[in-house]
Image (cartoon, rainbow, N blue to C red; front, side, top):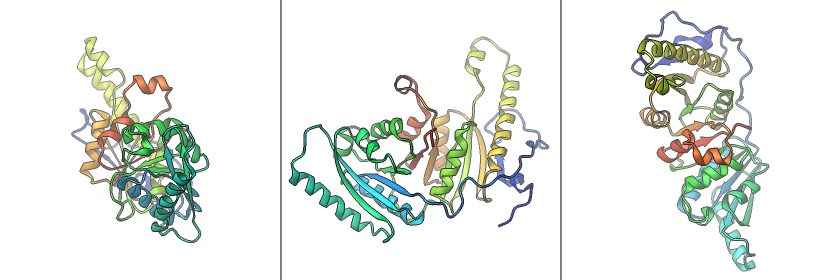
Length: 324
């Protein structure tokens, strides 16, 4: 469908949550015009290879089925099913063969198209390190939320967080039973350069879905300003400036959208909780987050929006690393 020069700024494309932020957004406010650029993701783009973390639990099989659905939709050439056993000692050959046969049975049940090669692999060692190593040439890694051999008896979210630190490709954590392609996607954005990658992957994973870009407004150093006794009207001025900057960034990001199925909203509140609440409100079946890079110490010390969303959300979560 063709779009005119100003269709990217049609009023229905951007919505401001009136109750979310104090102060009124001027009705006449318009972001500066941004030239329409080529779409980040085109309808025919493929996901060339996927890697599935498989521990033979029902949840990991569920993840494998979602991966197979994506492989069919995006014409993947290769799907790898990887099972990891903890420890460094060599496994007996008969045990390796037993694990391989179980994985091959699941691969056949996925009914992948003839053009997609199914590869089965059994590895030994740390779950995160082994799975990341197997996925070096993959475009996407898919895991379930089970706790089993793959995760070495640690919570699945811990495995996911360890994988995020190692992967150079996105990670899809599957929670729900896949019955159809994703139809409603919530993309959390923080007005950084990572937002375009998050939108790109949302459109690639769910090309026919309704996509809502959501930003939770933060006033820099608001807590410290209130503690220091800064007057409310001064803080509100900072809040309005932050709001206008967010609107401007939203409109620029919308200018990259290839269709009218992408809308946006701005909210106030605790970021992770607001993201989780909004996914419930719109009944989203996929949440997309793009965390900033952190050192191992920062990941241990600082609370993470991504970690909170992964632990609190009941929906599938796609984590897009900064290097993507």
